[in-house]
Image (cartoon, rainbow, N blue to C red):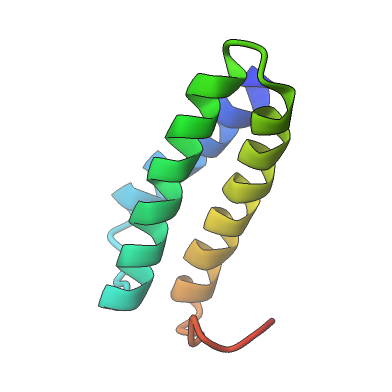
Length: 79
């Protein structure tokens, strides 16, 4: 589990270094998601299994939002 979260954190850091442009809407969504993942990670480390599962799900959503921003997709359009 920690490996997955470490990989997500590294990917997020690497993408931040790429200087991609995000609309204010995407920035807000990604920042909110990052905060949620950090909290779920904290809970996962104390063996809260539902938090571990939700953290993986939220990490996936966050990465998909970053990819959508890279491709200039509207955050309000369902994929």
